[in-house]
Image (cartoon, rainbow, N blue to C red; front, side, top):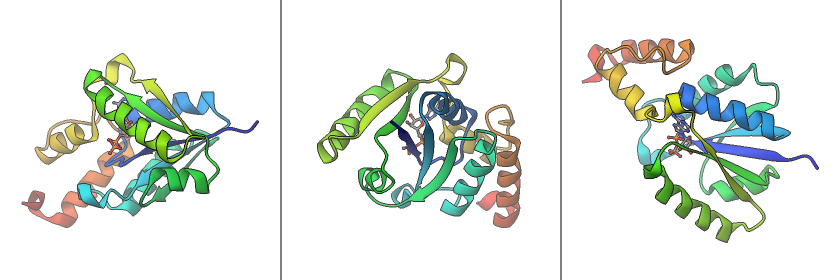
Length: 166
Ligand code: ADP
């Protein structure tokens, strides 16, 4: 049985914590689709196209991983690409309540799709996209938290926005 798993998120931007989860998922499943959510409500810093392009470049070495954007209900998208498993990363107990709630709703919407949680590596439990954005905004060094293409993307973006976009 060929099992495709989807790893959904906003990936604004993808961090080494995300890559670690994607890498481990790629060893567990035949195929992993990184589903980049439009997440318009969150008003992401990077555009959907930028987030997809970064995730694609970063995960290119992982042969069975691909990246696709989606809008709307995750379960509808998962079904449309014949995906049986949703991967979510768990960092700390603070992620737990929310993630279990979402998993319950998703099971209600689509009972045939299972949610699988992958525990974050010890080194990345504190890491989030919002922390990276915050360090970048204040010109701190976040280079060990992201792939070099993300550092380039921040620099380009801030150059476009002018003097730190403020
Ligand atoms: P969302 O907007 O859906 O929370 P994110 O892009 O913030 O999307 O995160 C996507 C998934 O990756 C979530 O399951 C989140 O818990 C997980 N994740 C985020 N950062 C890390 C990390 N440092 N280690 C492991 N998992 C992580």
